[in-house]
Length: 383
Image 1 (cartoon, rainbow, N blue to C red):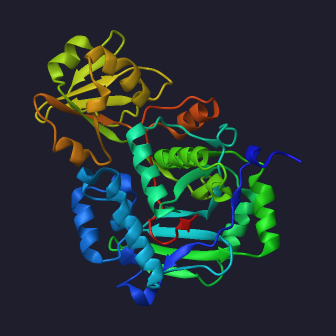
Image 2 (image 1 turned 30 degrees about the horizontal axis):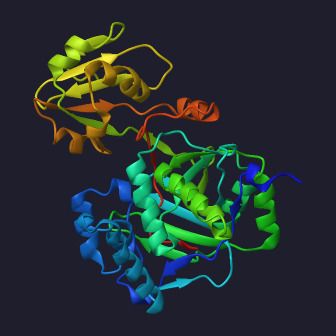
Image 3 (image 1 turned 90 degrees about the vertical axis):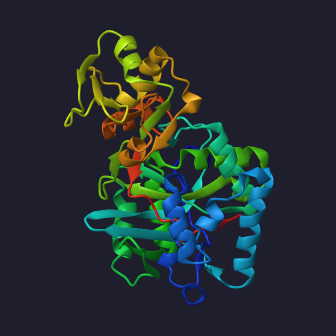
């Protein structure tokens, strides 16, 4: 009998969900993941409904220290007590579909069995300890997994067939969010179908596409609470990226204390350098101080984000703790100035990400942005 920790396992759970009659709308209480929430989005979500998930996943008042996580814990307990959120009566795996124009996210949501040895759940990015600790403290305070991490695997066979079959039935939950996205959820609780999915997934490994800090917090929670069986798993969504392709976008950087003159004078030999912002080159790094651009290029199989952190930042004397990360270029450009440049990156190729993960090589933190990302608040898990 193989060790269950050595195979990919996504187990059924009794998920929690909002009750439509208790909130202004199921879409109105949802949120994007915590790490893509810009202040303007937070304000919109906070105003949309008193029960929006942003009130749980993004604790305010950092001056309160660990006490800042008490507010979302008390709020969640109140929602449970008042019947604003309810728990499913029977365990299930959930098929979640999100559609926005031509972009589709579709996969299975369940309790992912953790894999500390990195045999079948493969990270591809470094993490920042303070964000791991932040997510862990929120998990410990609420005793819940509020945001699913996103995993990608290939050629799901019978498991993906089960996903497609479930979608032919009536959805269990339907919601529409302010951006026009449509969200639908189906339940899979038939024992034979669940057994088929379990057998199929055991043949695979999966790459963490989004949620490295949350997964690291899952692992830390397991270390701190080895006596709790429920701490051996964490909320996750698993997508067959062959049948349901994911997008792969870059995350840009803003670098305080760096100017274009330093870039020009201290970039190592072997890099092509030209003025302006050169588009259409998948291996470029473009840098601006808000008025002028400089584009760098080198021929390498290594993703440019790794070269930026491992080669260029040390050459330029950059202190990485001072960086900020931005999912949209416009947000990075808004902060660019003579002594604070914005660095525009191109996304790594999917094959580069998968190859590095399979080889146990991780890219720098915030190297990629996989999408579409699952909406927070349609399903969550308690321990």
